[in-house]
View 1: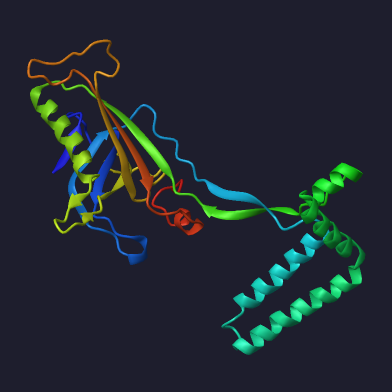
View 2: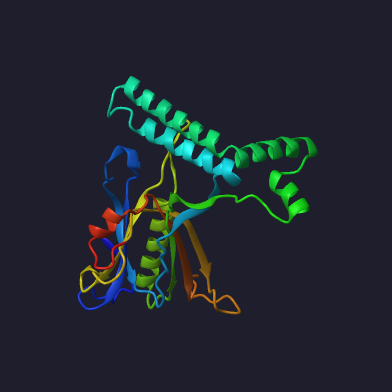
Length: 277
């Protein structure tokens, strides 16, 4: 059974959005939870949510001056050696790391002056309570190059929300509105296992639809947790208005979702829509 609003919604001629709850499965399980509850089909809002594909990048200082540059090179050598463990024997991989480190220290000997001066400045800064760059700024109007690089931190989970307003035209539609609101509340709530544990709430598959099929010209969504359900009666009215049975004349529903998995290049390329996720 599908819960729909408005009741005259014609799936074959209009755009709309569907919400189907699914049993939660962790990403580590590699499984997709089965559908639960009733499918909900609602009119397409005037403004669909802006869904950003965001990634975290952050500045990372590798260390100040020539000493920082050398530390960054050493870190790269050690990391590369560790990543090669498994491609070669442990002994060969370890020897390769040692050889690289020795090579870097030979470079340090050759450069000598700049690094030696900075080591001395670092020792002085520890005694005086200032950073090496602060001492340089005060005395010479210079600072050590912080060697900052923009480093990729990882993809962010996406969040999005929908706003709907329900105005029932008859008692049957009023009943359906209440069923829709309750379905969202029930499926987004934890349930009691009666053993001191709670069952994780369902997650949702949100889909833009057009003419009875997924809309290929709008973004797709990952499974998403419904993290917030907000209901307000007569949100745009200056006073309370209801029908004779107490049903508000207008009911606003706000839904806030957060996807449970990150989105990668491969996901966009294999997405069921022309825009990807």
